[in-house]
Length: 115
Length: 114
Image (cartoon, rainbow over all chains, first blue to last red; front, side, top):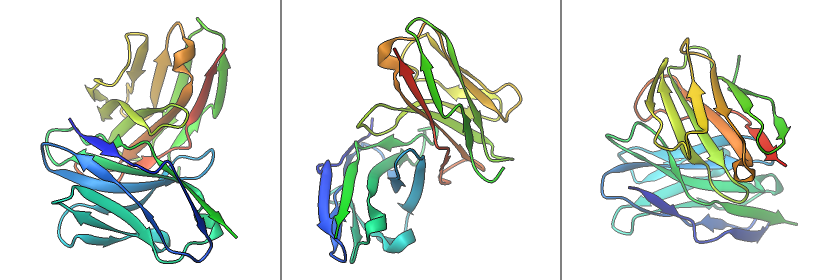
């Protein structure tokens, strides 16, 4: 089975400051990795994904993440946040084979950007 | 439609009542997923369809939960004899094909059981 740990339930940050949201995963098989964002009363929107190749992936809204296989991590970063980035962020994994393409999510990190 | 559509957006039911939640996936999308998101938690997988075939229902919490997709497009998640612990947001997602394609999510149905 797979599991995802997001250690920080809340991350406050000032506008224009950098931010890192941490994600660690556990799996006995190869996985794909995803970050989703959820605004209040909305569904999830894909920010970025790692399938293979370069371990640094860039997504929408200026976010990027780096896959580190040895540390089983996929931390999300943004060099300068905006008020509009305030939302819940979820890290997720999907088995490469045999998992039926279902996603396993972490518990989420609430990013609160302050003026 | 342009995106995944779910209805109703909000549903309040008394304990013991049956409810039905609807999902309209993006037109032509083969795969459809249901997730349950409890308050303050990440979504948890319930079930998965490929066209009309339900290939995985391992996440359904009990036999009170039933999902169908009879014509391979619209899907309905039914919960019988609802309990308070069923209160959650139910999310539907679809993908165009198979494999690692990103899942497109609807805005969910917020179910409250009184």
